[in-house]
Length: 155
Length: 296
Picture 1 (cartoon, helix red, strand yellow):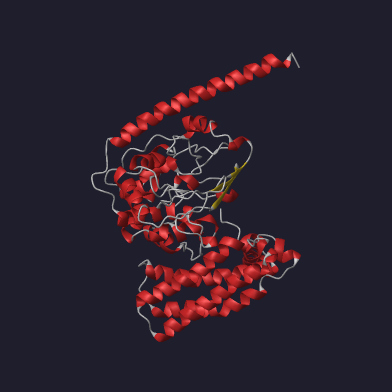
Picture 2 (cartoon, helix red, strand yellow):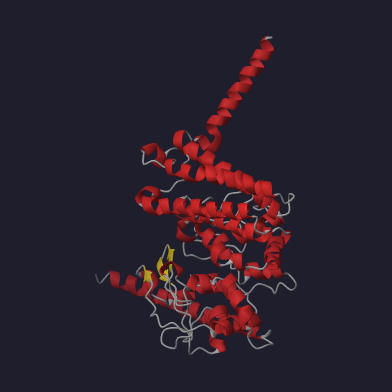
């Protein structure tokens, strides 16, 4: 029995350590927004893999991605508060420009929300696969536009 | 003061001799390069339609059109930040007043192949002639044929905003004698290699540069001195071990990485203004080349 307890304790510790150090030790609001970004990237990946021919084409995956984008779109406005931890918390990839030019940052979120709504409408309307693909990547382009201005470049 | 005079004189003479030697070397190399270029002349009149495609994927349009300020096509004025100061791209429309309107086909080709303007002056290497020198004569003729179809824009060129030393052009000759790479061997049948080393000018950002801005390697192993101070990741076959050909294909088209991330940084512009114009066939050719041992 003691051996089981020991093993369970080690597993718990390993899990907690892994959680604490995911995103290089990000905590609080920084981790929260990184999780949101990851959630959206995961949904994008599923759709991208379809367009690459790695997986079968399935409109449900696009519906799932739209649902994820809709859920997080407006939420992003709350994930970048102007606090010390938010600006320079461990592992943050956010650039100070977010708080220097908050209106421009807000416009980028508006663009994403608007593009997602257009994508959603196109999906509901049952547009062709070709048009749906176009609108999908017009939506992800708004992510790129925002990353270009407001995220540290990846190394 | 009198004691210092011989030392200053000696330094001056040495610099003069080195620059003169560099100028002579660069002239001789340019002559060889031009001779090599003429060995495979264009066989057809320039095709504007193909030229437009090349002008997009090679970055002529993206670098010489100030989209941010609704600038006219090819009218220049795009700022490029470098450790030597800010370069402002020139007007390359066919305006006779401020563009390249009076240029001959040969002068245009020499700009890309030799990195010199119509008066024979050296261009700063912010203009990627180190890569364009690998373009075929036919492709260069096609690009110029397209430029000639675009309405001239009379926007005056703004002077570069460079550090005091960089404003002086003759040392570019010395730079060229050190860092202007010889033309790549023609990549016969390897479209991907041609696109990467020529019009795509991938090495300009993805190969390491030294403090003088010279490429220290032809390998695409990444660069800690990228545009706007960015560290640019490597794209050698080893660097791309986790990327499948279809991952590279979609990335060049829309900027999505294998993990589903939307790329940012300078590459987002490269995708928007250059690689998203590539045909599917050319994207795949590039991907196959990048994933081959030739790109190790």
